[in-house]
Amino acid sequence: MKNYLNGLNRELKQLILLAQSIALEQGISAYLVGGFVRDLILKAKNLDLDIVVEGNGIKFAEEFSCRLGAKLIRHKRFATATLILRSGIKLDIASARKEFYPKPAALPQVIPGNLRDDSYRRDFSINAMAIGLSGKDAGRLIDYFHGQEDLRSKKIRILHSLSFIDDPTRILRAIRFEQRYNFKIEPDTLKNLKKAARLKMLEKTEPQRLRDELIPVLKEKTVLKQIKRLRELVGFAFINKRLLLSPKNRVLFKAAESQINWFKKTYPKRRGLDSWLIYFMALLDSLATRDIKSVCRRFAFRKGEAKRILNYKQSNRVIMGELHRSQVKPAKIFSLLEPLSYEAILLIKAKSKDKKINKYIADFFKIYNGMCISVSGDDLRKLGILPGPYYQGIFAKILQAKLNGKISTKEQELAFIKKIYRY
Ligand code: CTP
Image 1 (cartoon, rainbow, N blue to C red):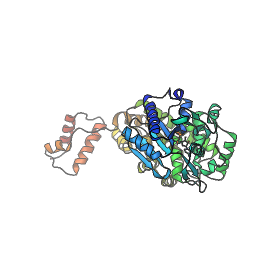
Image 2: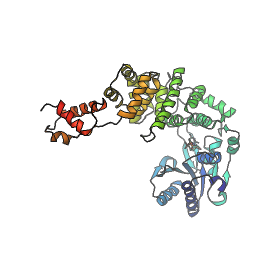
Image 3: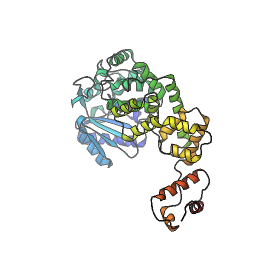
Image 4: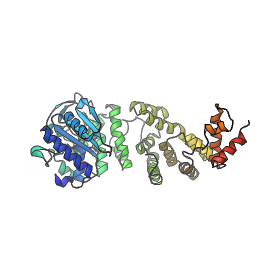
């Protein structure tokens, strides 16, 4: 155990020690499991601790949250609980369980089980290893399905032939892990994956579960590689039957990647980007608006996400057309871009081959975005202008003059008001 824990940061080590001591106090067997163990062996960073206990996982989680003073989110259906710590570490705690699939692609029914049952219900051998935290197994790597061997030979292997039929979202997961780690889906597993694809198992799966596995694909570092492999093995009919990855899409994907990198490097302190949303918009780019609306509805994206996707679709051509004209004034650039999300603006920048448009957008981020005026309603009152709806109009004119570089200081704003307002 010591060997595995060596590379971990102090907080993770302390959490693992706490888990050990709670397991000892409650007299139960607890294990580190899943992706955390996989990445521990691969020496890859992972801040999602996954713990399984043979016994009452919720009671174990309650004690954990009590000791840490952290909020606990309970998921009753599967007797699991999640703790999210201030440092960003996520802790999932579950009771060891056995799963049955009442029908293909449905959510499983669960009954209590032991570690072996719990390992057998998992997706791939590399995700089915455990490290004991207490009792006779303390510090021991438990590897029922040869996960270590598959890690060494870089293979993604399912544990039984019905794995993709039971849970078709594993198709997306197999591709994601294969591309992330530069592994290969092992031949039998690949045969089963293709069979599940032929049986259209993804199309038979609840769209929201697909969304929850598609977003991580789009969050991977190697996103274009991921999407290409997805296209090769299963296509995109599970998103929309008209969706293809055309050479144009691929170029847009690449350009989107450079724009995301440019933005992150140039503005490291601006609000975080939802890069996955930019890639998703790029993927959907060739679809008609009505198809995109239907994807958003089926996948039940959050309101803010669906709004950004549709805003981009509905406005990108108009905006590129407007910015393509010669001599676009800063106030115009501002009024066109300010209502859009950063994600949409960056994809427009990626899509446009016009250097002028690129420069306008770069100027927008550098100078105009978030620009505001210094005078307030109080200042207007002091100038003897009675409060009324035209206040907004005055503010807009000041902002316009400021954007166009005609004024900059508060004094100049006040002088500008006196000039434009007739008492
Ligand atoms: N799991 C599974 N089948 C799924 C989803 C998850 O068997 N459809 C199991 C796997 O053992 C996985 C664990 O649950 O390792 C945790 O799942 P998740 O957090 O989604 O993935 P990780 O393996 O931790 O991968 P990542 O590094 O992307 O978080």
